[in-house]
Amino acid sequence: MKDWLNTLVFGIALVLIWTSFQNSNRGSVPKEPIKQQTVIPQPKLYPYHDEVFEWRQIKDFDVSIVKFYASWCGFCRRELPVLKTLKNMNVAPMFGIAVGDSEKNLDKLFTRFENPYDYNAIDKNKSAMRAFGVRGLPSTIIVDRNMKIRFVYTGAMSENDIRRKIVPVINDIKKELNESTNANTEEDTTK
Image 1: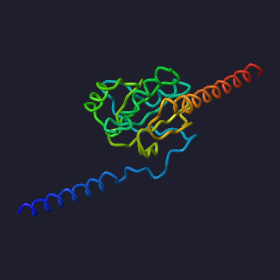
Image 2: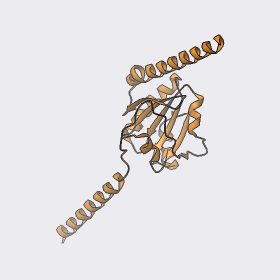
Image 3: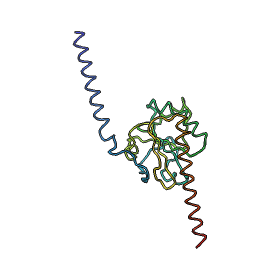
């Protein structure tokens, strides 16, 4: 009797796991990875509490960091203290997009770890993740004021990654944008 019951429980567990795997992957993997220099998509996001998060806010800054993460993602949780260091460097605002999450889970996460994001939103149905072509969490996307994707980093960042990769990219973009602005200003004054 005990063997029969164990076999039944094991069989039901396998069917449930297989079914959830089939349903969770349906339509969730983007067809193509995200490409640089493309204008960012602007799918609907849900507010985290009463915070206002609108894609057009990115235009207010020379460079912005868009972070895709989740409260249930171990690598994302491990990265949060590093993101706090990045925030303290004040190189660019961070837009945090919690994938497939809820306010309740984010509240628990931010009780345990300080919230490093300047702006927060929830991607309940993973439409933003798919629209951006994000294939793994956490993902970091650096966007310029023209809403163009300039750099993509997939995986948890270390402080070394921030200092050697992220900050130099942000500084290069800012320099390029400033040179472009100065060149346009000089053109206007010579006319």
